[in-house]
Every structure is written in C-alpha cells, then in structure tokens.
Amino acid sequence: MADPFTLGVASGEPLPDGVMLWTRLAADPLSADPSRPGGMAPRAVEVSWQLAEDENFTRGLRQGVTEAQPAWAHSVHVRVAGLKPGTDYYYRFRASGAQSPVGRTRTADDPASTRPVRFALANCQRYEHGFYTAYRHLADERPDVVFHVGDYIYESRQAPSVARPLGTLPGEANTLAEYRLRYARYKSDPDLRAAHAAAPWVPTWDDHEVADNYRGTGDGSAAFQRRRAAAYQAYFENQPIRVRPRGGGLQMFRRRTYGTVADFLVLDVRQHRGAGTMLGAAQEEWLISRLVTGRVRWRVLVQPLFFARRFVPGPAPNLRTDSWDGHQEQRARILAAGAPGLVVLSGDVHNAWAGELKADFLDPGSATVGVEFVASAISSRPPATDGPAVLAANPHLRFFDGHRGYLSGTAGPDELRVAFRAIDHVDRPGAPVTTVAEFRTVGEGLTSENATSK
Image (cartoon, rainbow, N blue to C red; front, side, top):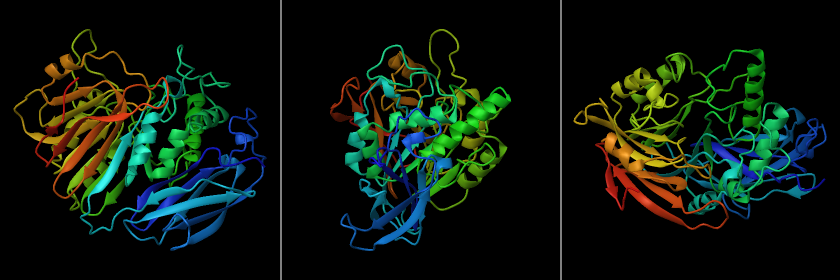
C-alpha cells in the first residue's frame, strides 16, 4: 500500500483525563471511485496507535490496536482515557507497514485548576480562495486547544476566480462520496494538517459543511435529508470528535471545561434551527442552565454567527437575518440569564470584529453584560464592508479589521485576553503574521491594547 496517512493526524475533545485521536487512511485521497474512498480497498484495515508523554515515546507509553472500517471511509477515532490533566502528550499511528506523522495533544486542566488556558479560534477556509498560511502560524503557537467555528469545507461549485483550483472535483458536493472528496482536497493542504497535529481541536459547524444558509431540515424533502445525513457522516469521518451520527443527525452542542477558569460552551446553530429559534428548545435550555451554574470565571460561547446587533448602513436589509439579528428574542433570553464573565467567540463574516454585549443594544447607556470577539477567515474572501460606517452606527462595536487570520487568546482567573492575528495575503504561501489588535476584559467591557480600527 502507498502511504495511507496522506490526510494527516489530529486529536480533539480534550477532557481532564482523556482525548480523542484521529486519522483517516487514504492511499489515494482524491480517488474518484465512490466504492473506494481514499483509494482504499473495501475491507477493514488494522491500525495500531501509540501515545506517550514525550516525542520519543518512552515515558508513559500507551498503545492499542483498532480497525479502520470501509463504512466510515477508513477513519479512526480512538478514545484514550486515564490520562493526567493539563499534560502534553504525543501520538502516532501505524498501518500496513507505514507510520504516521507525530501529533501533539493536551488534556484539559484539572477541575480545581486556576491555570490560564491558551486557545485559538479559526473558521472559514474556502480552499480555492487562498492558502492556509494562517494555520502554519497558529500551529507554531501550540495553544492548549483550537476551536473551529465552521465552514471547514465549502460544498459550493468552484469559485469563478481562484488562487488554487479544486482540481478534479469542481462541482457542488451533494453525495457522501463528493463530501468525502471535498474533505480530502482541503486536507491536502500541509498547513491545515500542521494545525491539526499541533494541538487538540474542538470543532463545530456552520452552513457550508452541508449547504449554503441551510436551516434545520432544509426544505423538508427526502432528498435534502439524504444530503444532510451524508454531509454529517463525512464531517464525523474527518474530524476528531467523540460522537458518531445517528438517525441522520449528529450531537454537536457540548461543553469543554478548563479548571475553574473557563467553561467553553460549543453551540450548533444549524441542525436544530427552525421558525423563531436558532438553537431549538433543548439546546437553549441546556445553554441557559450552564450559564447560571458552575463556579468558572468565564462562560465562553463558541459558535459561528455574529452575536451582537450589527446594523449595516445603506440599502436594506440592514440587519442580517442569518445571524443572531434574525433571532433577537432568543438572543435576549440568553443575555437576560445574567451570566457572569460572558464571552462570545464567533466567525462567519470573513472580517475581524470586537465589541460589547449590551442589555439593550438600542440604548448605548444600558448595562454591558458580556463581550464578543469575531475571528476573520483563514482564507475565504471578505465581502465589501465599510468598517468605519458600521462602527459609527453601532457604538457597542469597538474594532474592525479586514485582514484574514485567526484569534489567539488566554483565559485566566483575573482577565481574558484576545489577540487578532492577521496575514497580508493568501493568494500565495508564506505571508508573515502580525497582531493587529489586542483586547482584554475583566468582565466589565473591553479594554484595547495596541488596537487601531482599520
């Protein structure tokens, strides 16, 4: 067999005592034969794994054997338990005589820990729009955990103008085989693979993992249900997550807690959306319950869509209904919960923003009840945006930047800091990274450091 580890390795879903380890065997990742995804024969393949506390695999070695099944595109999801909290580990796989690259992961902190947690946030990485240089810089930072808030792939037909082509799969993805190929194309990027191998990921999705702007069950047709189920399966096959899809759905909202410092509440804004609701009743009940219980310093919502009110001057619509501005009543209930230390991490709009969450967005003098940081895209093209005009029309918004990049943050027992990391170009590899702004909060609004609106 040719090298089966062409799609790299990953880890995810860190707990104080365990993590998930992932790989997917693909000797020919862009094979067009739907009966042989990744160019693999339709039979199970034995895969061994190792995890240790050092890169030489001599301290605290754990190992085991599993099978990569053709029904799941030869993906491997290994749950490792019984680990030490707040500890770096290294892992690798072996199959058919080949050895994978080595990945680094890290468990979450002990429930009583007050150690600051270093995190990164990324989203929106349309392949043909540009190179993933931002991920190389993110990987170099080696954060404790990486959150991804959607548009990991784009199901769309190839864009009219490209920085790099999709190649032999330029059409829109509709079937399981087509979604699998799209993930294989995206994971062909070495910088994306490096970011996965550098730290554990906790991902959630937005719309393009299935279809542009889809909501819940879409048009309700059997055809859309089949498409959504195929997309959810492909998502599971290509991410280091704990839960398999069942009955055409996939449990996505969950929390990842780091000591007494931060409760990261990861939301699903697509699967349960319907008339009048972004989250559905069960997810909203779960979220509000978590916001008002526990003793953590920061309650961090990790989700794709712009959360604060954002009035865009000019032609209607001035409020974007696909964001939380389209679900103002549910947003108001979340803010009314009065969660101390509320922080929202968002993406989707391909620009960087920072702002304060108000008890009443139409009254600038109303109480500040939280803060929001919006990550720009890794590669997806930004829309034309008059940043200064939007800032002027929304006094609670404090910062805008049009570069692509990611967020790099630290949540500690006294303050939470976020740096906006930006690159100048994605049409070719190798762009340097800079910090265009840094903000801190102690739970009473934002303080800017080195921040200049652009």
